[in-house]
Length: 302
Ligand code: HEM
Image 1: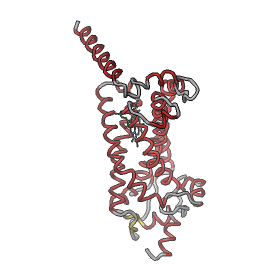
Image 2 (image 1 turned 180 degrees about the vertical axis):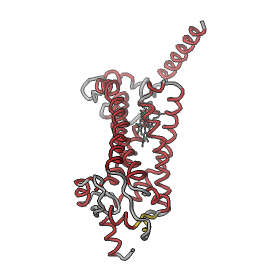
Image 3 (image 1 turned 45 degrees about the horizontal axis):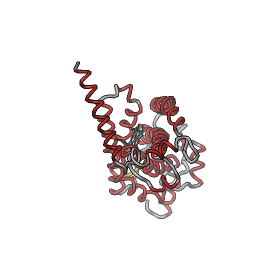
Image 4 (image 1 turned 30 degrees about the horizontal axis):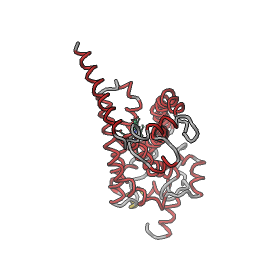
């Protein structure tokens, strides 16, 4: 009996909400654009995302995220067991590489990522987590962390962008996988940031901005973007595109985020200290950022 009453109440609420939204002619989903959303379905001008979205959401995303969530850390575990971490001397000079502003912005973005990535994954695997209150709380945390991240993303972009463009040394770095496949301490071709760090920078900043736009679009759903309508793209198609982009880019970001954590916490012993104190060990710079080290020597900074 109680269940029946609850069911009727839920039904009543949903109908009342739908009626309210339908009355709102300004709604991009239920208002005057409703017909566009329906008429455009799979017609010319439509992005034809309906079937693709259903297929990816139903059959691909969860499996792909599962492979990344367990596969990438497993690869690192194997690397750690076979090759092990790089250890650099702590007895030589220390080189000041990150000022206080760099470190604050980095930690600010880092903290938001530590919330965004696990909560994002929990939403992806929502049914395995029972789908209830816990997942809803994670969704809200994910939403809140977006605004924390949004504060840091532009300062982070501008403070580092000049050092992040691809250089010839980066190709060489990629060809030897940054020297991480051996324990030998041979100077690795890299400037202040190596090719791996540059890849992560672009994914976290430009990719992060895309994540904010697609995430907030999914969250607010019902809004008007004039140029989409000018191109005849319906709101539903736009939201599907956002969901697909958010997931695909999300996979790339999760994988690189794991790489970033592994490199800074495990693969290079003590590397995380540079983001605490601002200083890197001289030997670490000499080996892992050999071109930057040469520059600093020429400029007599060290
Ligand atoms: C810079 C990083 C990210 C930002 C700024 C971001 C932002 C957002 C926002 C604002 C939402 C809407 C939340 C809501 O409606 O309450 C969202 C939803 C979502 N995000 Fe993210 N996110 C990021 C990274 C990730 C990552 C790494 C994953 C995957 C692991 C992920 C997976 C999801 C999922 C599954 C949803 C739910 C979509 C839905 O409601 O259907 N996000 N994101």
